Length: 193
Image 1 (cartoon, rainbow, N blue to C red):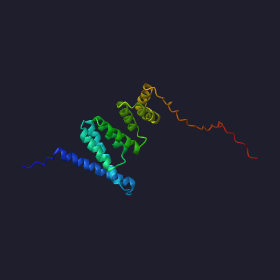
Image 2: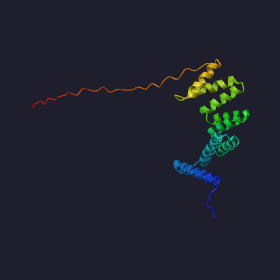
Image 3: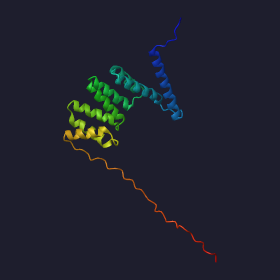
Image 4: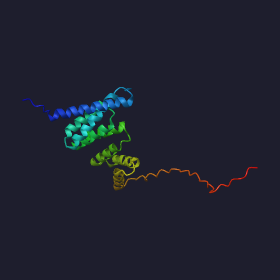
């Protein structure tokens, strides 16, 4: 008797391909079918990055590194994938390669705060405090409200006796009130003349 059992690996691969196909279709629909050169690969890059993060969480660092590299191959300017690759490389003790990955992430997205923090931590780990300082400052000055890394950045700057930028001033919004006019309670009718 033949079984219709599908091996779990084949099922997983089939699901991943389905997700990639859906991402590609979504991308095409959002851009109206007008794709620039290389953009077709971006959904695939997102999928590779998601797989890399999943593998990283379960401790499969070599496989995660491969997935992040595939994401970068699919989309060479994918800053988040470079940052993730840097984290894995650093975990594997490949500090020079990790530094290059973080720097590449910042080359493609200078506002990627996670890459600033990761590069600052790497510089600290290697005793390069003066190189870490500008990245902590960037993290602190550009952090959104409630960002716990902003507090850490402030603590690091204080710890190393470096200048701490003042907190950003709250955004002042001008509210214009229109005064209400008092409406008479009772309107008397005047006789017509």
